[in-house]
Amino acid sequence: MIENKVVIITGASSGIGKSLAELYISKGWRLVLAARRIERLLEFEKEHPDAKILSVKTDVSVEADCSNLVEKAIEKFGRIDVLINNAGISMRATFDQVDVEVLQRLMDVNYWGTVYCSKFAIPHLEKQNGSLVGVISVGGYIGLPGRTGYSASKFAVRGFLDTIRIEYMKTGLHVLVAAPGFTASEIRKNALTADGTLQGETPRDESKMMSSEECAKRIVRAVDRRRRKIIINFVDGQLVVFVAKLWADLVDRALYRVFAKEPKSPLK
Image (cartoon, rainbow, N blue to C red):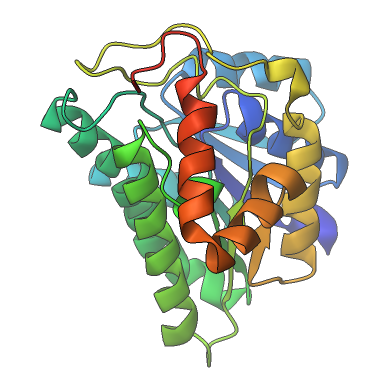
């Protein structure tokens, strides 16, 4: 029954992850929420006293934390129907200026976090013919200037999940790769700069972006329909990816101009 189904959402303390949690509560699901900021998750629980929620402090870049997350979910609810690998961080620095440790951090969170959580959850997802979801970015289809580590990690997640889909095609496991375009969230505020410090403020007008609530709706709809992939936004998503297949040089130049116009852009 729907009310017994269980979803794990990483990066659930804000943005798309929090909106996904709200949506699954409205659908009557049981939630396992993961984030480093456990205080935010506990506050979310207080705001939804009638919902069945398990909050687990989790740093997805730590393999043991991901193992613990899945173990706690099974201990509490006995099953996992959907895992949404949503946790992620971004960056803003040119490759010639960025510390290599920043790129490593991006891979640890965005790529290895997805790998670790998937590794431990897949055996349980298989039992339910469940869904494995990776939230990437349009930056997982085309390179974004000033964000080498971010795009590389998102390309890696897409390749990883596309391969998992093939390997598990006879098991009933559903794999979705969801790629939002620009979405209003805290990811730009928490993006890493060249030396690894937090950017602290967004360089873009968040009010003109798709809301995290709308993004979450489209991801959940794609899960329900067992889609393979979804590029969520049109202009800064589907259209850009399509045009890049035909006129890659044109898109490269356009992206450079767009990102170079950002306040305090690292691009010249």
